[in-house]
Length: 371
Image 1 (cartoon, rainbow, N blue to C red):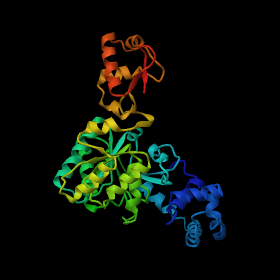
Image 2: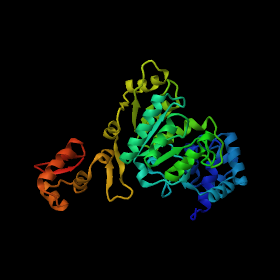
Image 3: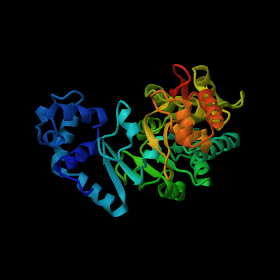
Image 4: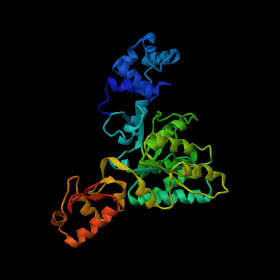
């Protein structure tokens, strides 16, 4: 907030105009060169921009005079809600790589670099006891492995996944279809507070925005977009969780599904995902084995280790130590042993383990390099 200037203020004003989504905002910025220029444009000039019709042009012109951003910023300052614009330092890096990243993101709590190591768990609001148990078990196990758990704070599977992470003091993020100061459903107020204290609540809606049905399918793209992969636990054949899974596929993220009872309506969505190529999940290791390499290495909190692939979260201390001394260039085991100060037979055994986990590969001769 300390570096808030006129152009950033104008970008937030555009973001708050009803009908100006991420793609329309990008069109406006490309056409006029800046948000300030877009807000200074006439109605006729605005209508020359793709995706901007008469009514939207009228709303943009009105927004230039109303300055809806000012009261929103005041609420954010009073309630310790951070405003991140696309391109800011601290903006969640995974969202920068999706087709339609939000122009502004409101954050209650804090996004950490380590949250790039995250997995979404979503599913039915009307979950069975089996589904709730699986969601909590996976949330707990993946959080213990070092992953951040992402969900939508909804009733049922979402809440169980968040609670699983919180139960082991793990990090969890909730992506909301309402404002971060307007928790929905209301009975999840205490859960929302706990998530903000150990992770973050995220929304592209202003902090006091009430939940609107049309906002939830839109927020689903952020649940998948901020995550390395999405796990679906119980979903009927027309479930919002399937929208999240579809977004994940379109964003190039992994999709997982937990199988259910063959005679349950809530198993249909998951079983269809499995038919379509989703990865079957029984254990935490099923998820860690399948996750893609990270777009950029992530340093784990309170650790000297930098993670390049989610599989590294399964390594013990010696395996991590050896891997830390293997880079993209071929390295001889003798060199690794000297740098790690480990006996050569321990290094050779560890290299075999790392190779079996597809973290390194043999190069010419006896040298090894990272995959």
